[in-house]
Image (cartoon, rainbow, N blue to C red):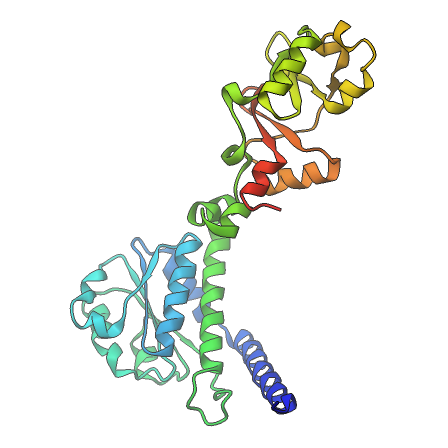
Length: 322
């Protein structure tokens, strides 16, 4: 088995060099960054992100981050742009072009197209005197710190800085637009992230599935409702259909002696814990865990006190919320 020491030493050196580069990048940012954010905010169309080689891979990720945080964006490959994809850019768009050297030949047609048709362009490169920075409406110059390979031939430090810069632009735009978790959920409905951002309304049971009884309902009928609906609980309503209590397994046990001689109002627990349909389901899980309960009734905020649905902990588990 190979000696792990030199491998670990290399890994730590690379990571520390890239961490130092990010610190240098943060310190180097100036008014041009703010100008770039302003240009992106004022875009009436989309943000077009482009780059060649490793910069192209970073550009794809930046475009995806923009798109998922409220800034419509897509990636255009510079080589494909020269063969028809320039038509994907129109007036009203803003173009973000990445090139470490600022002299990437494949970008020439794309850059010329933005200049010819007055499409605003943000250039990102490591040389302030490069063609890309000189042609750009806003230029952001990265610190020249070499690469982690030590020979300046493997894009590592430069791509890490470019990726971080893209994240910084995306978050600045996101914060200015007050982009909320609810907005974020709209773009991420699937997978673990989508589950974490699901709302109570997305998972709760509605209408005839909700176990509802009146305060005067005899306990014999309450037991039937609890059994039929399968939640182990029933919501107790007053004459105005407002929630005034719940009947749980615990209430049944506490009134076991002569249970059938009572009605729902006499057995129920008052002031039950509830949740809004608009709350994140993850918040509902936290409430259920802290209260050691398995169900929550959701109250309709437009009709104070009226039950809009019922959420069971199993609904959340099935959705991947734990």
